[in-house]
Image 1 (cartoon, rainbow, N blue to C red):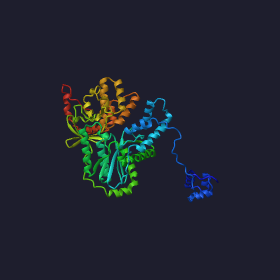
Image 2 (cartoon, rainbow, N blue to C red; image 1 turned 90 degrees about the horizontal axis):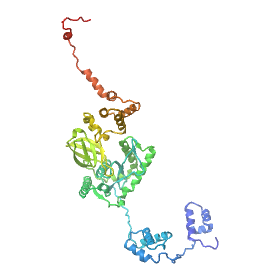
Image 3 (cartoon, rainbow, N blue to C red; image 1 turned 90 degrees about the vertical axis):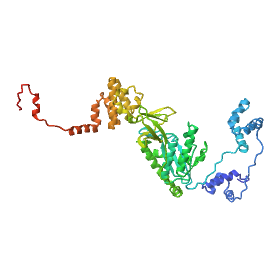
Image 4 (cartoon, helix red, strand yellow; image 1 turned 30 degrees about the vertical axis):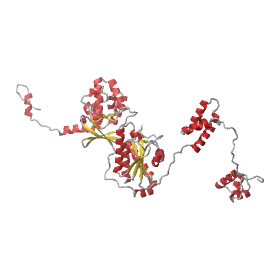
Length: 511
């Protein structure tokens, strides 16, 4: 408009419209200037009206009487005090003088003071990533995502390994917490899939793994981690406790991995898997697709990785136990059953994240699924197959056994026991349930047998053990028939029956 100078705000608004692909006429109309002025703006010929800086207050300072004496002096002594704490303290010491309407003004004053006079803030320094130099490990939880195995929620977290340069990642399902065995197993699995090792391996402070450990045990864990890295020629490093950005090359990509997992589960239309192995295989396939994006950088990095050693090193913790007379062992506050033949034996245990391998001498005797105690309470993992052979010889021990409920494998068998116990005489009920468990173990038909028994109970009858064996133990029935067929038979002479005739000694005619 004629007679008015164009302001800096009008210039900025006009140029903003031009950047949005509007024509000169459209932008000038929106700004309220002529097209001639618009051309002059674009050619830099317009002298704009600059806003004068104000150096005076428009109202009295509400904190003039207390700012220097009470607030600044406190901030100088304790720079970490925040504005809200200081304002509430001010209200307590000067009742009625400083209402909540002045809080925002006070917060701005404190923020400005800290910017001018406060301590230095944390500064992050971007790192130059060199191929083959650094690999990182961390654990993360799938918050907001529920994965189920055969309908039951899986309590787990993920171990995540990542190469800093190429971004190649490996993810492993971890059933327990952050432990050395989970780290060692996941790291070695990643390195052998990768086909090489970086020069340095970095992890967080492993605070969860160190929790509740003595200083001696912590030192042992540190030494084992160092030895693990040395086996692969890697320098072992850890970021400072509580400073997660030092592990940022793996912390930040957690979100990308978890987002892809969540989206892939939506695409799959289900977060339920038939088995844990199916879930692990699905996750591996997802990571293969995820890693395709960094194939070019990975090719560069692989050329710089160190060669792997001839074999893997131990990725487990060790414990030596003696099997009790109850055919049980105690491991990390969890009671496990073992086959009765091992009673009194000294077992050397290899504790992995998801399993326990038990050795007699140098021979692997059995593998147990790993169970973890919750909230430091004791837990049990009893397998009726380990004890049923002995229990079948004395079935009455079942009723008052401390492990009775644990010997019943699931809710189906607990319902069967309740029915038998309420409908049969006590001794008969114990004998029947022990016989059923023995059949389930012998014929490997636990699920089918349980479902059939519940069906028959609902129909008002419970089959005898003989009937159940003939239906489910086909191998045993076939063995019995084979024994009858193979049993040798002898044709006796007819004269051998003479001693059965009447005492008169007269012979009988055979018709």
